[in-house]
Picture (spheres, rainbow, N blue to C red):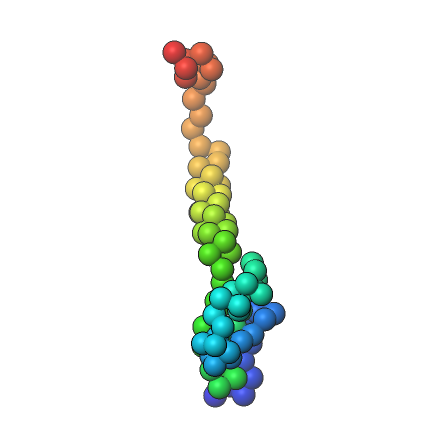
Length: 86
């Protein structure tokens, strides 16, 4: 059993404070994650909608980069620009 636990956020809020003012917590957090603590241990992480959308974009970019690397050095085809737009 671990005595300490890493918190992956600069900001924290207790469950009680989150229940009292959820929109205030989100507003203060802005784009940074907030660790929601239950008995001083992280129970969840809260992020704004904008931060979540940014995270999804980054995950999509990482997945596409993986595809690009996998296809690098593969077969190429010569194409004229005029052939692409008739």
